[in-house]
Image 1 (cartoon, rainbow, N blue to C red):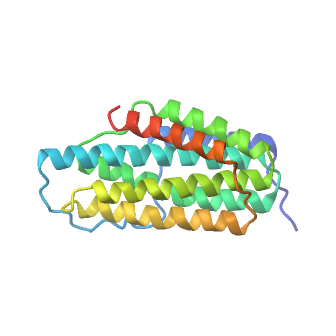
Image 2 (cartoon, rainbow, N blue to C red; image 1 turned 90 degrees about the horizontal axis):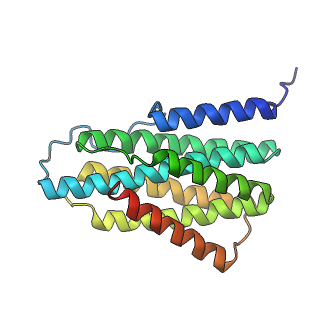
Length: 213
């Protein structure tokens, strides 16, 4: 007996549920956090503020990733592609939980603009998904490539003493590289240079804003 694929209504309700859980912080990691079990290192006030700002930016990135993957899942009717996006979104849920927990440990908060970030990323993901499988996967590959570079820059900025944040960012970087490789293997198209530039500029606005707000 085969199971009928979910209807578009079911998928839309699932996306709405994901949005609510993402914005409410109601997500649970499926993997144990890579951060050391006991992070007893005392950071200076300046180090703590820097780590908090960087981890807030990373949390915003994961909010956007949830929106992108869920929009692209909704936009495609290809079951294999839907599974691809759902698998990647599960990794991003881990990242959400890890960064949210680390922000609390640092005595910091998530971005107050998360609903705006989610809505914007969802719209972009929906558009990419409507342009066909190759473009949709190409958008994933380029997004993850840029995120990997962004995470590397955070590893260079995070205080050396903040081993917990550094461990989380390192694992996130590895996961994003794998997502990009998976997308390319699945048939991702190379995006035009102007599109890549626009993506970098949009990401720069987001990161600079989320660093403070």
